[in-house]
Amino acid sequence: MPSIGWQELVVVLVIALMIFGTKRLPEVGRSMGSALKEFKAGTQEIKGKTSIRAEAIAVEPKSVAAEPKSDAIETI
Image 1 (cartoon, helix red, strand yellow):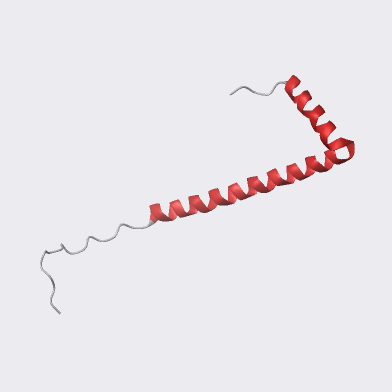
Image 2: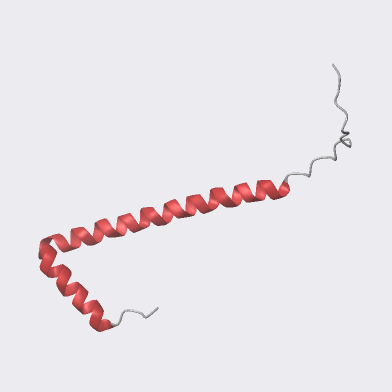
């Protein structure tokens, strides 16, 4: 996957500046930054819950072998 060079970055910034203007561009940047921060926190929370559950499953003892099942039907 190719990386973004400085020329592409300049083009994207100029287009963003033309679309949002000089007054709204910092506001848009802050909102995108806070959204990214919240997304990262959410993924970390999900990773934490998943790893805790995986550890709990790995730590649970194996069930004791039940009595051998017979083909006979139990009568009440």
